[in-house]
Image 1 (tube, one colour):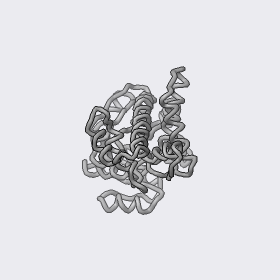
Image 2 (cartoon, helix red, strand yellow):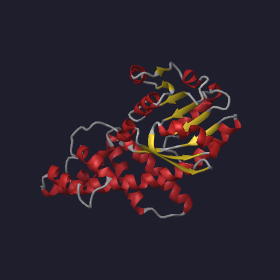
Image 3 (cartoon, one colour):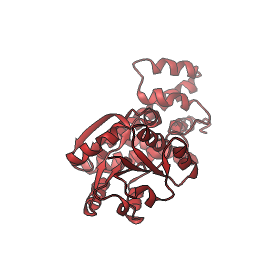
Image 4 (cartoon, one colour):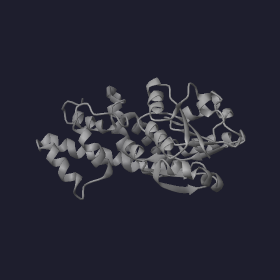
Length: 294
């Protein structure tokens, strides 16, 4: 497996594609934004002018897109899957509902290809460092075939099973914790603000104490900035926590913390901040406390 197409050169997708190139794969990437295609080309990759070009004759294609609907449209609505090399593999790395992934995998297999369900965790930091955690599900020979590709993007590649959707299920559990950790970190820092505590000093304390979490250490400083760089948008967590709640509903599992976190992100999105960095969930607390939420 040498030639890789890559669709979705966003804040995570671009460094992932670049890392594939560094690992020796021939990477051809496509994104609707010309600047993203140019950035890949500047880093040594090949910029595709269309989806068909990104897929054409490739051994595998990575889909780092927004959701399952977008992946389905690319593969079937725009018929890009038909451009893959015979036996070529589609690697879906977006966060999607497990049932949607299973249905998409069945369609891909019926078309003569295979799909690897491989969502990631680790954010922009992990994407840039090549240290993502990748939760992969596919038939074992297919997983083995794409393992070197996954290893180029992640430091922890976990085989979740042979049924598509098992990777997506693991990602849902992961996102429950990420969303809840992020919301509670925002609650703590908003309390410090409200009480007049030095927020930088407070962040230093909690980041290095038993109260710490990865999400706090990664997002805490940006919660205190007026206009932080966007590494993952509020609306991403609106989507992801919606997937978590859907999984819980299907399993008849009560998820009160996930539901509350989802409402907080939703309230911030409803204020017109959906495209802002997800650290700005703190705006929900500022609004509840009668302070400037923006």
